Length: 223
Ligand code: AP5
Image (tube, rainbow, N blue to C red; front, side, top):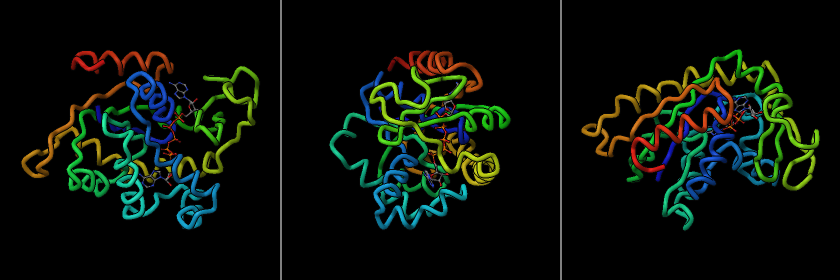
């Protein structure tokens, strides 16, 4: 069960990944969470990427490819994994294939841009676990506190409207080409197996989006 979740910033990749990861018992690998953790710990990688992330730019392909490659070699990935936020460029997708990592499903969560702005301006997160909330759409039981640990929630520095618009530009330019790449995947050219492509309407409620994903996977006999 090797899944890629594709979608713009704020599409709901993190939210759905957490649900799918617990449904299928496979690890969620969020490159955004890994980079934010490196920043919090003040590692050399964290120091290198901090300004790029705060400005809404992608971090360099070589760096993120090396991080993901190392993570995928860990034991908990042998039965499958869910990639949340990777690949984000065609070069990153090609690197997966070059390493002999076949993907079973690419799930695109499609949401329009104005909805993304609303979602990200109301997002709060629990930094230690990556759990996400929304003041209106998905509020925590106690305002400002994580449901599981009770710890304080924070807002991400790249969720300011201007930076969100910058991230959307980056998505259109660098990540959207992956839709065509995976929808028209050439096994002949890549020498890797073509993943099945699933597209869901991410503009619906969290529960409805999850139902759409599970029902599409069920048709392939895996859910
Ligand atoms: P990353 O952390 O991956 O951010 P992103 O892709 O921009 O996505 P987000 O986390 O903003 O949104 P999401 O789709 O996960 O939505 P969520 O579920 O939280 O990356 C951050 C940065 O790291 C990048 O800008 C880049 O600098 C760097 N980076 C990471 N990976 C990289 C890579 N591979 N290459 C290069 N650079 C990389 O939901 C958003 C909000 O909406 C939440 O409040 C949630 O509660 C709410 N919500 C979710 N679903 C619904 C729904 N159906 N209805 C209503 N509200 C909903």
